[in-house]
Length: 207
Image 1 (cartoon, rainbow, N blue to C red):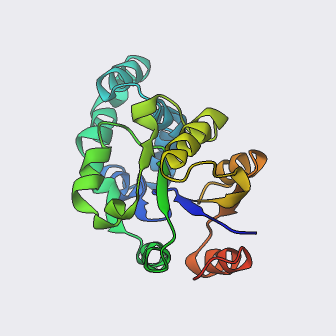
Image 2 (cartoon, rainbow, N blue to C red; image 1 turned 45 degrees about the vertical axis):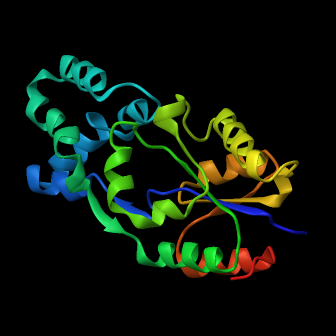
């Protein structure tokens, strides 16, 4: 078995993004903050923007549902950079080692098209990928199989006739990894660099 390319998710693997980083300042009470993030600015809402809805539209829709929380809702994207603490060094080290070994690297991320430029401009690790599929740009989000098909099509432009079983996909979201596996890829659930390194070695990757 030969792996010909590795595809990385970004958030939770290479980039440390967390809603708590902002909202623990805006809502100091733990119970109140948890309710807000579970019911108002919840991940299902974030995924709408990751899937291509504009921030303006998403914000307006949510304010219409929760007008009493308008200020906190507007803060989500107005102060979005405060949710990004930087890169995850262990994940970046994996990228560096695979790159040094000559393994072709690609990126597949659920990310709003409007906020992705912030990360692109600040985190050099993102420039190590030959191609990146950003969900907000293509109007699809993981774990939809169609976004994996788009990623594979981009990979095939550089690695013609590559087979699904020659691809590895690394994601901190278990469902996304399972979706890749269901398509014949080698889905790796990222729970830490050491565990992922072990899994990549088992796939005979030079790491």
